[in-house]
Length: 324
Image (tube, rainbow, N blue to C red):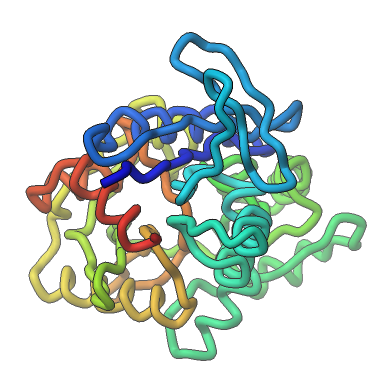
């Protein structure tokens, strides 16, 4: 039987492109070469390229997502999407692949776009009764009514770009005078900002995936940040403990897994997603969902895969087979 041709898309146009390259490289290394022909594809602002083992780049033909390898034109049978941020996590790549008829491992275009927009995602999930923090929305250019914001969300609060990941542009605000600088920082990432009340409790993250029409939630990972919240340093520079399984009760574990599966289903996700929660007084409060979560060595999902007694080779193979 001929091997499936799997293009592993990585990179992107956002601040997360370097992390995505790490994720994509892990996937390329882990996929079983006895079953798949694996092709690293870098999707960057300066161009889209297949990158051969010797480092030689072949430009992607965007008309059909084909590329040359050793004189042969390759069109992938399936794309393993590890692009964080735009255009891989916000629906653009999904719509492109769906128009071309190429299966891919991540959420469909609408589910990806909805989940990437924090405001819209929270609005939809609130309608399903999912518990979320109190929030206030601000657009670039709006007059900022600091008193009105604090009256609604309280202090401390968090200021976040509406569409960004890896904690880029996020600030914790402890006093009114910190709000405007925090907004300026967030506006560097997006012209839409969300301000949320602080939740006090145990922060956990839960990966959910679909296989053979069954939704499966991993054991949650507990996040203990050395910093004031789970920021970029905590995520990628060792300034946190990420404990799998989380040190929470069986009851809380089941509650947060149940919420994560509900959210995956409500948002019509595909492949692997990762939802973040804070468990406050026994109640899981939803923070955000990642439709193409990090898969690098420091990322949460690979730790949860190991905890589930699976190898990354097995898990990534399952995602490819589910997609194709």
